[in-house]
Length: 378
Ligand code: ACO
View 1 (cartoon, helix red, strand yellow):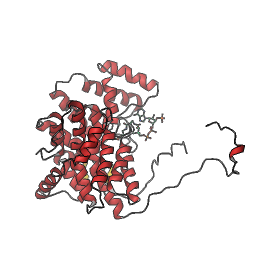
View 2: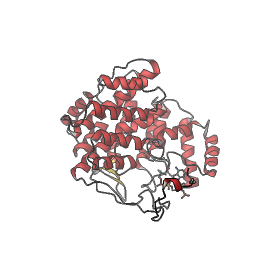
View 3: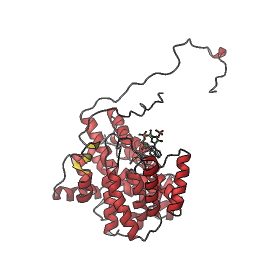
View 4: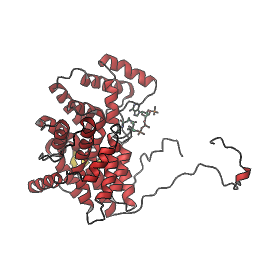
């Protein structure tokens, strides 16, 4: 395997998409031509999901119908409930969603007259129920009623998690965060979904694979890792010293840097404003100031900027969401992007199968079992 900086498919154009632009000069991040700033300011997550999956922004009637459609898809089938109850309380919530998605593929397969859009909408509706049911069952033994009448996924999730309807500011903050996480071109998990789709696998298989890819701390898992980092420090001075020490040890600081963006992540600017506001409203005097100091140290020492995951950790923390549930929220949102990419891949499919540079042994004669000596790897 090549170990040069050309690894990781950096700079390789691996296909075409009409879904989003990432870091294009003068354009930044757009979903189907709309800027992320406009979408975060003026649209709700369900509008964005419709835009990604159906191609245009919905009319008011279409949006209402879509919210109803998603709301009708929140119910947990009995066998899935059993599976969630049997998973250990110690499981990582990302493993729970990965398992739940795969199990639903057995219970409600795409082949049984369901369209790809039916499956994607079902997963959009069901993931918050799945996560909160498992979380609540193992935290308190309660079998949660997952049918709420909240029209939005953000409100539905906060209500299931906290057992009461959320304040509008809290609901809107999470709603904006879902919009920011919804789509991002050929990132690792989306590319995984497209590879699976290119084999003509079903939607569940593609999304299960994508969830597994999102889990790692170099990708979606960074929001949980950023939370753990910020939590280490009692105040900004301690953060300054601690981060300098980590940099001396050449450790990566989670929530910073990006493969495509070079100067800033436009999503981070938006979520930072929400984190600052939520921190102020919840009376925080430590978490946000520590976050800002880490940000300043990284800019000063490494000229590296925060990506979406860094200030999302603060926003979620101020919303009272436990850190292990941070990356699952990324799943709720990115299901829209993954789904749209699966549809796009299917519409003009060719198997994705790149080449590799072979750097192994030259051709050699086969050694019979009796004549082999122990190898270094044995
Ligand atoms: N902390 C410290 N140094 C960093 C960081 C970081 N977070 N990110 C990059 N660097 C440094 C690397 O050490 C390397 O330095 P060197 O040239 O002296 O060796 C240089 O910047 C290039 O880094 P790479 O890891 O090669 O960059 P790549 O494009 O492969 O990685 C990535 C991008 C994975 C996002 C990287 O910046 C990283 O690991 N960040 C931390 C994890 C993270 O926050 N992931 C979330 C991504 S965004 C999202 O999923 C929403």
